[in-house]
Image 1 (cartoon, rainbow, N blue to C red):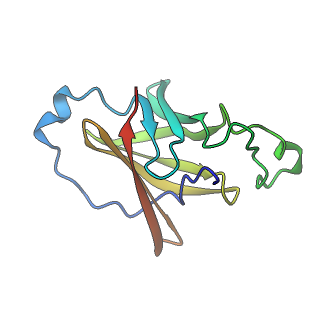
Image 2 (cartoon, rainbow, N blue to C red):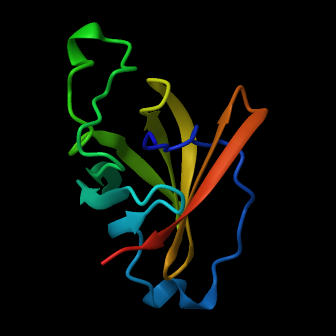
Length: 138
């Protein structure tokens, strides 16, 4: 089964900051995909939020849908899928998310919904939206 990031999102509902937000460790760390067990690693990049595939669902997977033919043999392990997302509020970041399943980049939101839950939500053309909730991984 392919690692699915899902199309990332633009239309996230505005969330009131939960009481735990001030004490939450934030989105930095490893997050597990609920369906295939892939691990995304989110990290600080010059004050922004970046993310990469730490462990794909299958270590042999390559970025074979990349629009650049020269990059289609790149392993998914270590591939940056979120680059310099900007903080929107206490628990959300907005940026471009790369979807390895179709080789496209979508605008989207990364939202910490609980100390151990991180939602990636994305839309194509502001209408077709999908989201996935990752859980904190060790």
